[in-house]
Image (tube, rainbow, N blue to C red; front, top):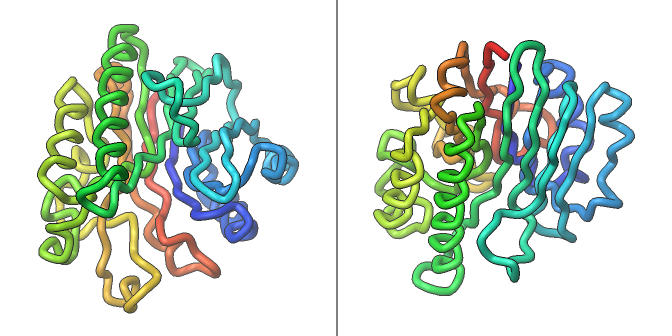
Amino acid sequence: MKIATFNINGIKARIEALPAWLEAAKPDVALLQEIKSIDENFPREMFEDMGYRVETHGQKSFNGVAILSRLPLEDVTRGLPGDAEDEQARWIEATVIGDSQAVRVAGLYLPNGNPVPGPKYDYKLAWMARMRDHAKALLATEMPFILAGDYNIIPQREDAAKPEAWTEDALFLPESRAAFRRILNLGFTEAIRTQHPEAGLYSFWDYQAGAWQRNNGIRIDHLLLSPQAADLLQTSGIDKEVRAGDKPSDHVPVWVDLAA
């Protein structure tokens, strides 16, 4: 079961690039972030014609997450528990029925948090605390599951080409990284770092200042695997070449392949 996460930075802008990647990479499940579309306007027929089931949790012009799956989906839920007043579309969950194993997947778009200090950073940390509580509840089910998406967190210095440029940014502040570790330390396996410990692996390159051409990137898109999902892990990777394509997102897909 190949599961990928991809912040597409707008479905309208990626209306050609996304199908091209799906055709080339053939993920069984694609968890999308920043679709920037309400549910009714998402071009679901395009992806259904490619063999994907489509589930969205959209929001006009901002945020928005989606699941595309070649495999059956059950128990689809939308929104991160813990705050009934939070209307931002940042979380979608479903159970994927594989050939030999069902896997719960959560697609997430974690808040950016800038500027710091301020209410946006407070929201980021509060959101991560809610995510940790929900992750604990999911772990209690002992079902294989993955928390995948754009975390807007640079976990370690080697996850940035120029870490010194990020020291005052919400993505790299000690409080942000500590909140990420509190989730990770519940017992999750961070798929890419487990299999690819080397530096120089990035999933985001800004559109400005020739970041892509200079390989001035950061790694902020992550897949955290529960112990049961980690037992199924076969391979993982980052589709870096997508960033060099026509009208690319500033993120690239990150994926795992599970024996499920």
